[in-house]
Image (tube, rainbow, N blue to C red; front, side, top):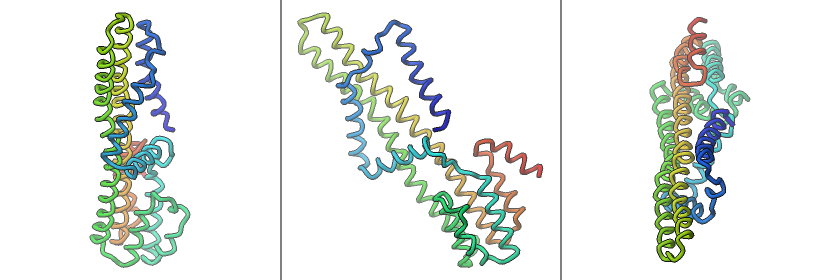
Length: 267
């Protein structure tokens, strides 16, 4: 897991719990099953109605992959590989790509768009057609991933509303039995827990999850755009140096990108 995720969770929840305890609050009073079931269950029930199980499972897989899996785009590896491809094609012709398709360096799924471009190049497609086909594939990928992000955005929208519903239900229960003043005040406090849960889940879980996925998707988009441009340059017969220089312009989007960009310029 990325260290920033751990820090974010600790700071967010630690600040809220710490502030509550500083005012001499009792921590156990913040944890009750009934408002949790209303808010959490109701939120995901509404989300399932909106999207269906397939989209929700895909969204959860996307989130887990974003946060817990070390699969971040590696622009250095991509540029190096495309430099090798450009150099080989200049020396031995485009058919050299056939032997490079099975390289272990590009065996994982993140290189599938690159392999698609290599096959198109082997079919002697012009650079414009390669760009058009790979861009269409990228557009489809972006639509799919944005739908998965919308799952968490929708959950963040439903959650506060379910919190209000839970609070109203609690107040109805309170007002139906007003004989004991002490019990009445305690029940009101419990009723407002649903609102707390709804707002907290939305702003500390669902929306941050969606925003994290959006940031990752933007990097993935740029990574795939690098593949598109690189394959078009190779198909056009550009040199390895030209390919490297052009793709190095994308470094800014990635971690330590400014440093890598300057290193490329100095070389």
